[in-house]
Image (tube, rainbow, N blue to C red; front, side, top):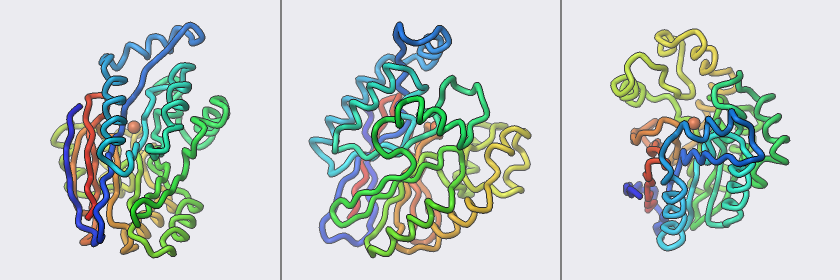
Length: 277
Ligand SMILES: [Fe+2]
């Protein structure tokens, strides 16, 4: 595994350590799955990602208060992928929130929206058997909140719940799959992958202008999403956002008191130890 380390000062008396892991993209298929799933299983290449995942989990057990997985644990829905995810997530050390691939039947085959997500979730037999759309846990006086924004959108109920969590008065870490738009991250994405859309939640029209029509429709924020992002940026208790989806690491400030940490793909072995102090 490749371990990166980041420290954020949020004024804790006793520091805590989170292991941020994201985008493992497990890609298993067996005789119960059809040919298309077997083709997908070969798509991502690296057979070591299961080994990396075990290393991440072992490291978290030995060194961290919590492992926070921000989604795309699996690459697509298959019998062994879902069974593996269910087995892994029984581990209380792992806090999980879903990413877009955790509901993908066949990667890129369909328009992915709430109906698609619910269809996959129910077909899996209530997903991975743990909360996937919303999750929360208090660790060492820090309130860790997971919100599924894997299709680039937030919904009003998620923000309503987030506000109830804020009433607890604890510093908060937000775990989401798709990072929030921020100018320097947008530019970094364009630098790394010229001509592509940036896969960030909350891009305004000006920043969507260079996107293909499909990607602009996919990633254009709804009013609820914009309300959510405005609230997230205005709530002083939300100190850290942990996100993935981009498969590269980047850290920047969304506001004077809110840092967004994007961690690279765990399928390549990357994990980030985040010390909050
Ligand atoms: Fe993703």
